[in-house]
Length: 185
Image 1: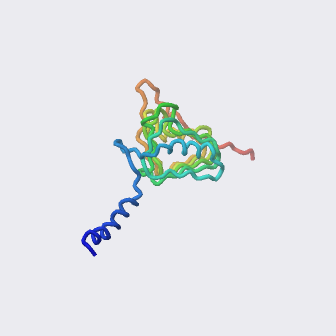
Image 2: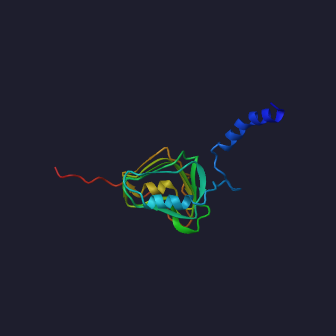
Image 3: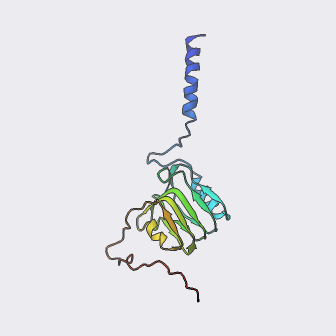
């Protein structure tokens, strides 16, 4: 064997390992390059049926418009709140990051960042569960979304303190959880 053949045989496994590293390509701002990700994700959300699990792969994804979910019994699952990041920093339409109106909704192991309005808006929903979710937006956080769902639970979620304009009244002290209806004896 010649030296060049031995060198090629020794380097071949290293080249295969580097090509198969599985790390997604990113742009200069750290966003995962996947031009069809947003379209595929919105289609999955619109076509979701009860029991569906929508996976968000690891990566920081730049989204340009709000996402919405109306189906009941759907789970959105990421690879971890520091690994699967939905960033709305490039958002040019929509009032929130993700709007959910379906019952029995679960979101876990994902981060939602930089939306124009609410990062995660759960509206008129029963049994919403948030596990290991990090939500941050310009106006409100996951904390305000919890008050919109009945029987909602948030476990190991992280959100910075809600930011509001100085002129906005403080309504957080007036909110009370709903009181269950009493049955006549």
